[in-house]
Each structure stands twice: as C-alpha cells, then as structure tokens.
Amino acid sequence: MGQLIVHHAISVLIVKASAAADVDPERISFVKALRLIGSTAIGTADIPLRAGATALSLQ
Image (tube, rainbow, N blue to C red; front, side):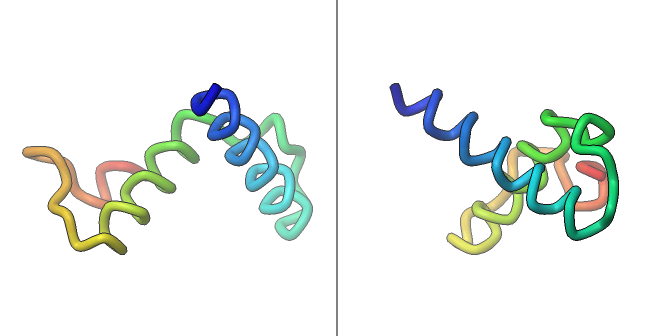
C-alpha cells in the first residue's frame, strides 16, 4: 500500500511541476523524478547517497 501512495505522490508532483513549467506531464520522466526526489530526501536527512551516485548523475 505504501508504494502506491508514493507513486501517487510523485505523480502529483510531476503534474504540478509540469503545470508550473508549461510542459506536458508525459514529457517528465517518472524515474528521473523519483531519483531527484530520493536524492533530495536523502540529502535533507543528511544520509550519504549510494556509492558512486552524485546529484549531477541523477539529472
């Protein structure tokens, strides 16, 4: 159930971001959004990224 909630939340964020940028929501990659959100959440919690990953490699 938790995964479904996370999927829905990311989808909502994609729709809001696409509206703000005046872009079709289908042009935004779900996987890239997931990685960006994950790296942001990890950075906020001050937990290091997995080995070899950087914020720039997630773009």
